[in-house]
Length: 267
Ligand SMILES: Nc1ncnc2c1ncn2[C@@H]1O[C@H](COP(=O)(O)OP(=O)(O)OP(=O)(O)O)[C@@H](O)[C@H]1O
Image (cartoon, rainbow, N blue to C red):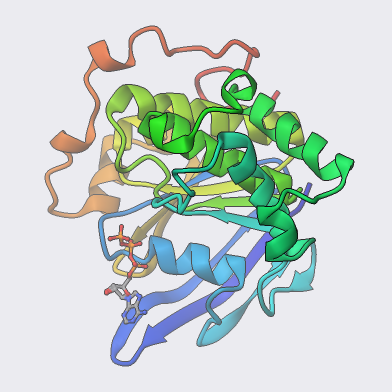
C-alpha cells in the first residue's frame, strides 16, 4: 500500500491554469474519487500523479518519494482502454507486463509462467477468468474496461489511477466496473484515485472525495460530508440532474458480494 502527498501543485498550459495550488494527502488503501465538471483539472491531476505530466509548481510524493516520471508502481487506466480488439482478454491482459519484457516477447506471448499466471489472476480479480479466451471486440464496454483494469493489475502496481473509467458506459455497466475497481483496491491492497463526473455513482462507491472547480480544490472529505451544498460548490452553475442515476438503475447494487459496504468503506 502507498500514501500519496500532493503539495501545492499548480499546472499551467500557457495561459491556462489547469490546477492551482492543490494540496492533499491520501492514506494507503483509500479509494478516492476526484469530482468536477469537464475542464476542472481532473485529468491533469491524475496525469501529474502518474508522472506523465510535470507540475509547474509544487511536488507530489508517493510513499515519501518525489514523483519524477512514470513508475511501474503506479498504473493509469484511461477512459479509452486502448485494447487490441482482435486479441483475447488474456493476451490483452498479458501486455500489462510490457514494462517487464519486450513488445515482440509480449505479442508472441513469450512471457514467463509467472507473468502468465499474473494475467489470469488479474482476470480472475475482475471476474473475467471464464472469458479469458474471448476476443475483446466481442465483449461489452464494461467487460472491456475490466480487461483494462486487469492489464493494469498485471503491472502489480501499488497505486491505481483511473481517468473517467466509466464515462462511456451505460449506468449498469458503469456501476459494475466501479464495484470491481473498489473490490480490486481492497483485495490487492491498492491506493486508488479515480475521476468521475456521475454524482450518484461517485457517492455510492467513493470513500474519500476530492472536488475540483476551475483547477482549485473546493472539497476534500468523506461521504457523509458530500452534501448538496458541497456538490453545488463543486459543480457550480452546471445542472447536475443528468449526472444522477435513477434509483431504479441503482437498485440491487447497494452492497457488494465481498462484504464491502456501499459507502465505500474499507474492510
Ligand atoms: N495539454 C494541454 N494543453 C493545453 N491545455 C490543456 C492541456 N490539457 C488540459 N488543458 C486544459 O486544462 C484545463 C483542465 O483540463 P483537464 O483535462 O484536466 O480537465 P478535466 O476535468 O479532466 O476535464 P474532462 O472531464 O473534460 O477530461 C482545461 O481548460 C483544458 O483545456
